[in-house]
Length: 207
Image 1 (cartoon, rainbow, N blue to C red):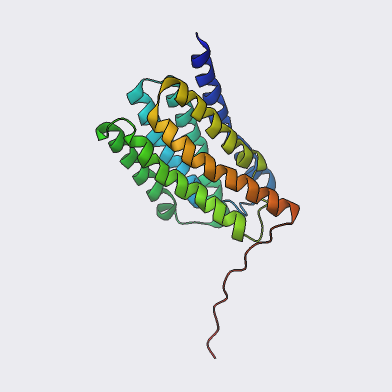
Image 2 (tube, rainbow, N blue to C red):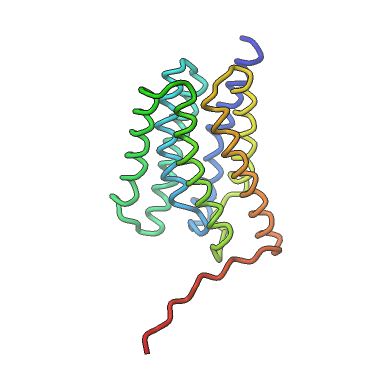
């Protein structure tokens, strides 16, 4: 087994483990405060789509972590749903629909096409976490290991994709890595007290 293959499996292990701290955080704190449901809905969808991409490209180190990460993301989403009493259809329809659309893109798009598609749900999902880090009055439910780990994992996948020439992962890891870097900075600013939650506009009561 050469070093590139070993590095690919290191990326796989890191990617799979990434969601575990958030599951532990939710279970230990009993709160989903500051956790973006949209991020985890789209993480479920991306687990489905990237698993299909791994099968199509013949990379087992893409198939294994994304199938497991999709299941862990589904567990996080289930915990958030229960904590906030979200409707079942509203919670699960989006990830399933986007995931199946990703499978279709893998089947019909040219090389790199799935990477372009996958950027949008991932950017929206991590962007939703960006919004919550800025505006949520309480971010105690957010795992710092997940926030920092997401950036590290994107950098790992980028380097592996560069070595093997996987254009889809290169495109996606570049864009999402930048968003993850922003989230790390925002989390550090919030925890240090240098950034306060942005006040949400109040709706005036009728006289």
